[in-house]
Length: 314
Image 1 (cartoon, rainbow, N blue to C red):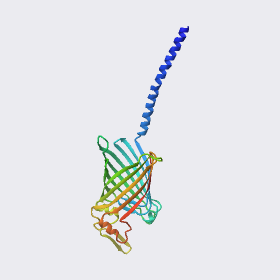
Image 2: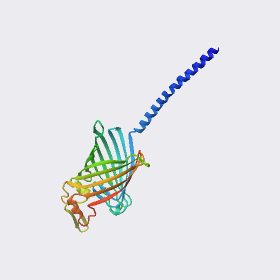
Image 3: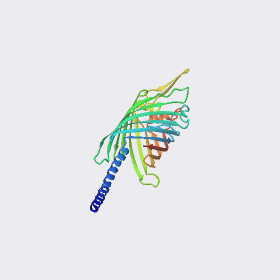
Image 4: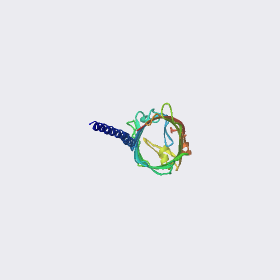
């Protein structure tokens, strides 16, 4: 009887020993499953965010649209089908904080732009230190005015193709846009971009980066007429109570302006960053610059501007 009890006790101890020896494997397996779940959650294909810019001026494609403070929020999202193929949209708005530009556009969201796009990494080297991205998209521009006496500015649309070549030296980008609907014309843009990591580990926040960007734009004569609001040989005709204005011949195809911009970004965590912007914009087109010197045109040739940015993403 004692032998049976001893045998049973030994068998129990052996069983527990094997059970204990299996626990680490089970824990490892559970940890592996949890790790896979976390990785799947981390690699969720949707990225979205909200950006808010508060600038001293509204500058669009090297045209100084407004030289007084503006607020410009943007909501965006991108869905990644694969690591090299994505589709997305954004909705961008402009709000004039003063009535410096036009009194009828003060105190409301006077411009809203809607964008949809499809992007792809069409080439990358084996070390993945260089790649070429291509994006095609469509943009719809709408403008509102705060005046019962004036009609809203005509809305218009454009389609575009943008290419960006990332490399360790400096990123190179270019874009061709074709405007249609209410306005007609082609716009070209080319630029260089470089980001420097200043601090990678900080007592507060994660990193501090400096981004430098330079771009120059060109356009067809019709597009330059639209963008800069003036063409060569601008005329005004007054016939009694009737008033007419327009462009004779307009601008020739050529250069527009240039902007040099520096952005200092402080990443508080993976989802929140704040930054400051300092930029200089100059009009390079001589005929348009000459037209701005005439009385009646409230536009500037050169401007130093800037502000701050807040970005939320998830």
